[in-house]
Length: 321
Image (cartoon, rainbow, N blue to C red):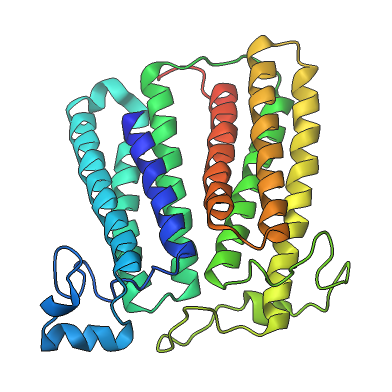
């Protein structure tokens, strides 16, 4: 569980870096202007200045990026150790041995995405995938921890499992939409709520909004989409947020009727996180994306995913064989 907490910190640091426009704070990888730590202006060599042409050195943004990388490196070591322990106990783990193997594979891919985020100049698909990959690692670590701790399995009807799994999928889609919104700098494309620039349903351009750009040369910092493209992304993120809200509320109500104390406790937990997340989303717009609220919105989204993963784990996993 400590590794899960470390993964959560990495996710939060990544969100902070992205929202501070620090994704290119160090325009090379894995160092920062050719150094292990953020250099001073006086330390930059002629070779380092070539990187500075891509992104002039701004120490606060560079440090945000490097601290994120340091913690990500620590997480990588922790997951590698977990894999080593799992290999030693692979017979005891049984089918669950696939989890640490999957984690390690995802970790390698996540490191590549981290490099591409910088070298491809914040290419939106890579930025979104990097965000989703980080949250996926955190969730897999959590599920693996639940398995190893022998967390409670709940014996209920098949219908609860189906609806809980659908709820998990809906939350995952919403997180992906949130990542796409952030990577395309569309968070304030609709500066009012619940309207979008005074319209309940604005003019939408799905082709521009969701067609992955094929250009790898431009610097995507600040976003390159038109106002209509960004409005479309923001509108869909909001629309899916309402779908997520109402679906999970229905699921929560059904869990209350289950008369199972554990399920009811989980329902209360999901309800609290859900309402907090929805409120943070609204405040992001009303208060024009304050950094603390925006970072919290990312963190609570991760907590909502963990809550739904816990619910599904408890419903689906019956034993360790």
